[in-house]
Picture 1 (cartoon, rainbow, N blue to C red):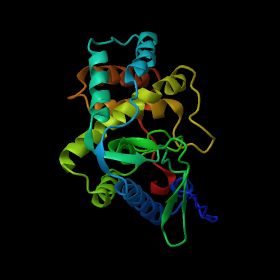
Picture 2: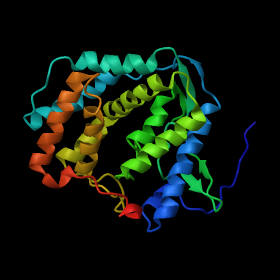
Picture 3: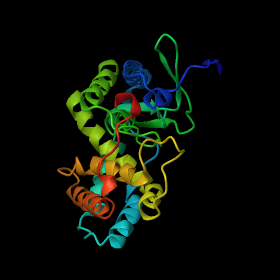
Picture 4: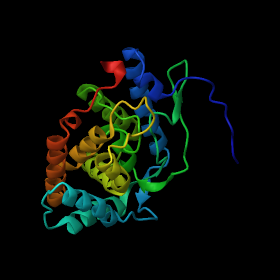
Length: 259
């Protein structure tokens, strides 16, 4: 049975993050994280994803960009991509039905502060860490991506984990970082033109420019360099090369609500 619901005319989380009300934006971020955790908890079970993302394909745009920027490419990239891929596709107690695109504009924030998610066209059975990465990265596939104060970002992840209650929570938290790496690899073919052509991320109200966006995504890989070391080394080299050529790419702007 399909149930249709009118979510009303409330703002999206994106509109609040791009607006002037810090308290409302903070409350909405935390409600969003809790809502996402609740959605994942409803289907959390043991199993393996039905489909496996081939992350090695994402190495091609990375190494192509490295060639253009004269960044050395370390050995071991295929092994690292396979490690990330195998970790997130293996049978685990963290399989969940994931929305797949929980960006700040794919929801409505109602007057009572509750957040209602929509846009499930990319939904499917995946490792729940792939969705939790949206709290840590944050917002792995969205044009509306900017810096969140570190304390608030940490609180969002705690809020999600509190309602999700994943088995073996420390292992699950370690998988979140690899999921952020996975998102960057899976989408880097699209990101590459942000650097080469200076293409904008999205509409004019996007808070970061394309190169700032890519540098931030590369930093998500670099943060995990102890586990996929070759990928971390390449991400570090690319990040430094981009910033050296385009210094304005160094710092990701903060969302207007937190300035």
